[in-house]
Image 1 (tube, rainbow, N blue to C red):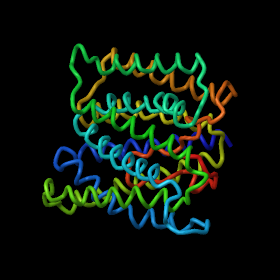
Image 2 (cartoon, helix red, strand yellow; image 1 turned 45 degrees about the horizontal axis):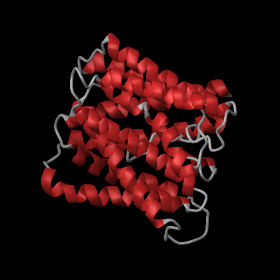
Image 3 (tube, rainbow, N blue to C red; image 1 turned 135 degrees about the horizontal axis):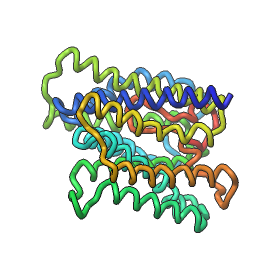
Image 4 (cartoon, rainbow, N blue to C red; image 1 turned 30 degrees about the vertical axis):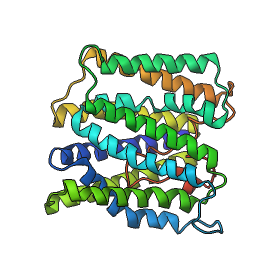
Length: 314
């Protein structure tokens, strides 16, 4: 079963990478704000199907309104920043920075979840952050807006994941899904007054595919986590760097240099160490990285645990 789960996860992340290629293509023509708006709009009917499956009784009033509001902000900021980053940077560099998300989850889980993080996991975080510095090379190239956007993506994704671990057992799933989607449509809708430009029919179809790819890839992740162990499925996210190199070279003329690849190797190694450390017991009670199962960078994605029926997971 773990082999089948691994294959499904690899397929899911291949779709996510294709999703990112379409975003990068569209970003050369339209504002990322406009892409997020249409992707969110096309996601509404897809996500609605997930929301009506929520069997828990209650209303749409959040139990923890401030945490829900903060998570909604994160889920508007993270995809928007990701779309900006894909537009401005080579795919491999964007993924390298986004791969620091597990490191940030580990750090944020200390004050928010009361997680005890031992010296080994803290060391892995430091090694991973060194890897990020190697990729970005701020003293050589300077930190661009694209790098800043990728950092916002990683930070926003990490914070929203930790928030779900904190309030997921109390809030209805429909609340956790509806509010971020509404916030995205409203905020991006307002931004249309400043950035909108007419969209050709083929490009409109491409924006619809952005939503569809995110939704379909998340369904595949649901199936992967249903069949296999989280410790086997979670590392498959790093396969995206392979797709970044392939797509980047074939479609955009991007070839990462040896220094970038060395930094990526450090980031991936540190993330894998944290996953293994949580899976084998260690000092982690919350296992926040292992329970972060949704990529969360596409308006067409949804919480994997919504389908796994395990409250508190992401």
